[in-house]
Length: 214
Image 1 (cartoon, helix red, strand yellow):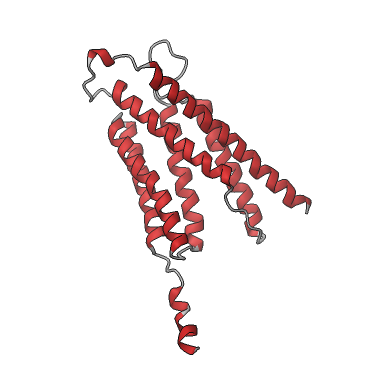
Image 2: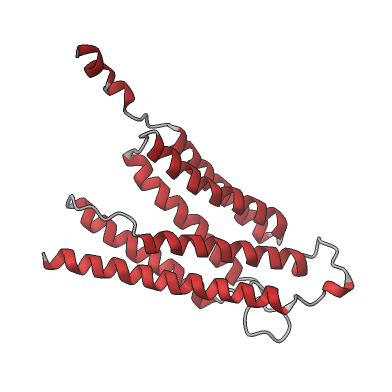
């Protein structure tokens, strides 16, 4: 039995493991993505965002499959998620309006970015408060669906900006006006993402109230 017992500590995850490397790379990719969005290079921003968002699924899967969940990862992973989502919504909300539209060309209004940032700040404050006391306050399934729809909304928004509003991309004359289907799809995704953002935030508040009553 001694060899099995001595092998156990070696299986503990290291600090600089694959999931944590992916999390740090997501932070770096997010910053580079925002630089290109500020320059209106929407295609480059789109590619970088897709890669960065994809690492979120990969590092979570890897950490669970190989038992490489660390305290650093539990802090850095949600932080990286918040940076890329909140940053993307802020930059897209700052895109100018197209023609007579009431919304920016990105389809994301400034108040929507405020809702996304406010929800993340609220959940972070609640999680810090309860986990400091030793209470588990892990992510809910509604939060995972929220992240999924937020990513899809950002991807479709960036694709629309690239195809129809990117000054560096030669747009044929017949493509000067975005088709209604693309516009409606973008609006549906954005509103669904906002709905899940509000609902998931309320779910965390309800969980916090239940814990406080106990």
